[in-house]
Image (cartoon, rainbow, N blue to C red; front, side, top):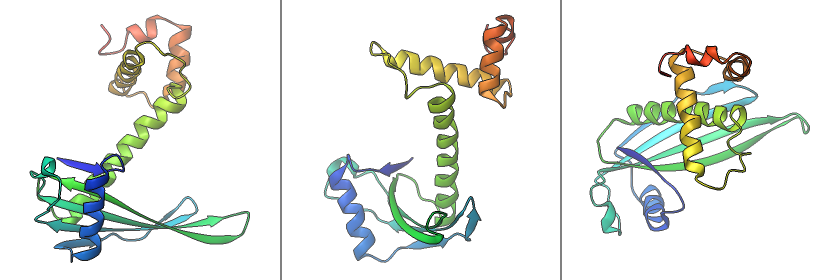
Length: 177
């Protein structure tokens, strides 16, 4: 299991930062430069084995992973490149190579972004004003998205429009009835 460490786990995050700053990594992988969409991005992964923390709740964690991202974005208004630096921390109960962590974390975020974008934009999840049992409606949106994906629907917005016009269309999908 690999979990991202965020600010809601302040002690764990501080421990990860301390390890990153004070220890040498046991493994590292520097990915090739990626260019596209007006940016150049460089990712580096550092694996720290024999993870330790001051919090006993995390004693089963084996490794800590730090992912450094350096992005150079071209700002068209200023006609110049701007550099951003970000470090994300992950803890793991398993042991992988730096290369495997790199592509596993990247693949996960690609999937997350794809699903969240569709839910937020096409299914208007962020604009929802539902206050009673919002989790139930979130599950319904996830179910609907899952049915569309199982049926190999590429354009979710067009499919939703078509489904409103003809009720037999969604009933014909695999996984509905």
